[in-house]
Amino acid sequence: MSETLQLWIVLPIVAVAGFFAVRVFLRQFTRPDDEPAGCAGCSHNPDADPSERFPRVIKR
View 1 (cartoon, rainbow, N blue to C red):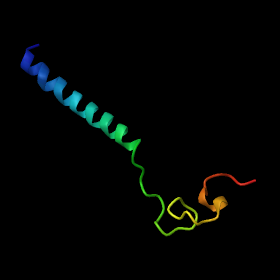
View 2 (view 1 turned 90 degrees about the vertical axis):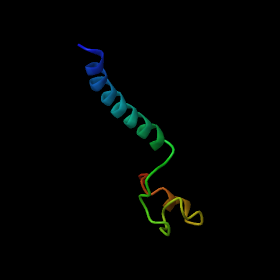
View 3 (view 1 turned 180 degrees about the vertical axis):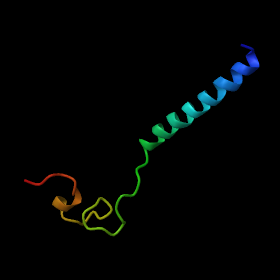
View 4 (view 1 turned 180 degrees about the horizontal axis):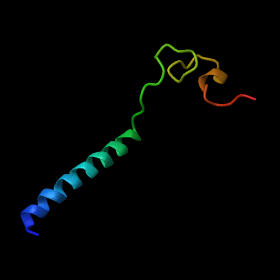
């Protein structure tokens, strides 16, 4: 296999893998806005009742 042909195969694979690696790395530091800014039961509203701030926790 010639070196040029090998580069045409390897470089796109490395580029795509690098893109997804950077994307996964950056997702650790950013999170999508699941809830609107004015909601009562989310971290955007620090004055909300603490039991309402974590709506995904199962209440017993």
